[in-house]
Image (tube, rainbow, N blue to C red):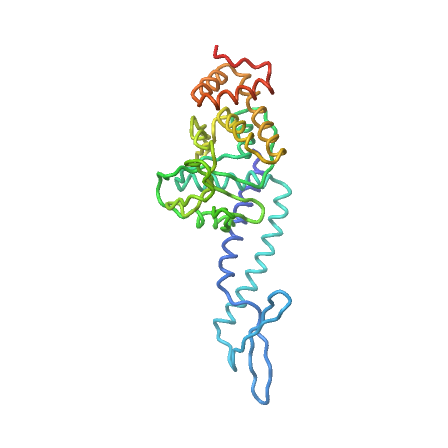
Length: 314
């Protein structure tokens, strides 16, 4: 990585953190401005602010407290700083991959706080491409998904407070599950479904989040791949487990485009996996450990899309 690009990435994270800090401080400060109205020989002061198209005001009497004046002046200063930061972020965003920088910072925060999760979802493809050397298509997505186990076996920590430091705020899906967004990217948490047909989110008390339960996710805990960076580590599913999972969930997709996307990703990964004899053996050995019905379905899809691949362990 060039020194210039690394500096830009570091500055991007710095400005994101500053933006989050400023937004939190602004929330606590008085809004609007102070206006004066002379009635007879007396002067009365009002605090005025705009809500949509309406102008709101409250009477402050004949004197304005220094706390309100200082607060309004502080807000104006912070709002100017906020505009300057956004200008800087827009310039930097044109020069770097802000998605990758954002994901890397979240992963780093989770790792340094010993939050036990696995990065899953489409963003695993660029990770496998860059870190594992697989020739895979680059997938751009606003969704950043993490797999968390239930019951969770880790220390208690408020994920919302941690993500707030990099500009993410909390939201809730219709099923009650938690997500965090910065207006561009969306961080969600998934957990293996326990029993069929559960459609309610599962509360992970130690992390103060609610995760969406989905089928087949348990297998993504098998044979995870450790990614080691300079000052942190994290885990993604092994390529073959990730691909097998994509094949299994594809048959339950209601939308054809999502079903095709799952198969496309799975085939691209397995094409790379089966190029390497040692990796191929590991992938096929794992396939044999899966339930017969799952294994049979996966084999049929592989034979359909990769007919030249041998599915016997040599």
